[in-house]
Image (cartoon, rainbow, N blue to C red):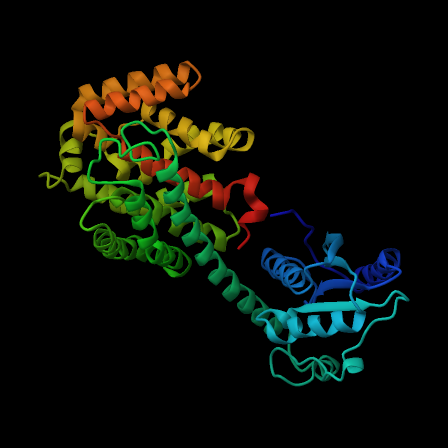
Length: 448
């Protein structure tokens, strides 16, 4: 999110801001058409905050949607408030009528103050269109009556403003994170080539899977990822992991129903589900960076993971047997530690996604992950010898600069040995998810 000034605003500050706004409007007036000025109706001495910035972005989005031909001519973010100016070629009365609909009918419309100026600099009034005065957003009476009588406290108005913005922000963030998680699984599936894994070339060492099957499985998990994000917003910290476990069991059932019983994304159900919840928690605090999300994920699930391993005396799964025999904690340990494998490859992934492409960055990330991490699916298929072979080849490919022919050759070699690296695939999906939702390079697009 772009930085903006914060702090108390005095009456003199607001008077100076109004004068500067009038001068700015005069400079931006056109010979024909209309000038649109968006500001925010925010009572009290605090005119900016992360939540108010969310509402301002929503106002900009609605203006752009309502006036598709209008051009953003100027934008200001100061402690006295946010301002955006649009130049539209349409008749000012037509523009004002359309934007009054935005003010009157959209969830945050009452927070928008959208002035429309003629080429002569005159404001088009609601009365000129035969429209009633704007209503108070607390009681529904005419707003100017409540303002004149000071019918409502600043605290009451601020609380209602925050409630309205937060409700929209929560809804949009949940949808955004769920969509990003599904798209991350789709991107992972399509990333080609990947050693031993399903991709656009082949089904890897998974004869029971295919690219269309993985895509169908990803879409079947959309509701689960939305549920994880909602839990991240709403759950108390001590309640989050048990709630995620319950949601995850249902998600696995939905996955198996969609794939005819094939385990396509069990690992991703855990890792991406945890990250969705953590990303929602961080978004609620406006701290949605990759580091913050991974750290929050680790903090939320670490107590349960540590308790699980501490109480483990007999193995009921391959992963538990690995822990009892060799202390390998798999994806649970990875998540509890804040996804260190993701953070280790993150800088290179972001740089290559920006300079090359996300596809190329993904291919290279798989090789880097394979060369560094203990992949339990690889260990299950090939034991320590299989892992040693795959890691040695991945390190050689990385040192050689990731030649595609060598990666394809490793793919063929791993297929011949029935080796795969599902853990690397899950973390690749996590990388795509974080890049879409929490990277500074995508921050403007990340706003819900």
